[in-house]
Image (cartoon, rainbow, N blue to C red; front, side, top):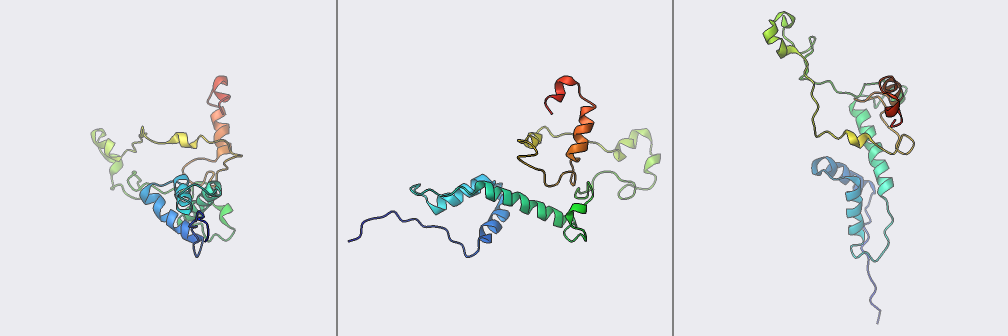
Length: 177
């Protein structure tokens, strides 16, 4: 008679890309992050916790960032550049706001001749949302977490930005940079 052994039902997909496609479809719609997804896969692999499952969170997270970067380049029209994506100019991945006033696109003729009481209709109004997550930009540093799209989207390139900021702050604030 055989002894009772703990059995582990290991997830063995036909293709490892199966997990990636599943994560890529779940992440935006279900607001799931890499850590939660990998922990779920670990639980599915060994729900008892008797076996040590290798931690693949860092590798999977790196792959998720690279995949998002490549999709962004493709959607920005830079996927088939002749000299590669390194020739993408700064700001090329930023999407223009269709609601923002632009004389060449969405303002009626004579918009600049309206009375001052109606001028607000054609002015650009910028506001900050109090719930935005700029703190997510505070990372360990460029060495530990390099930017993939440095200056290609909505944020300026980090080098010129840091030089510009140094001209605007006093000595106490510079130590924080």
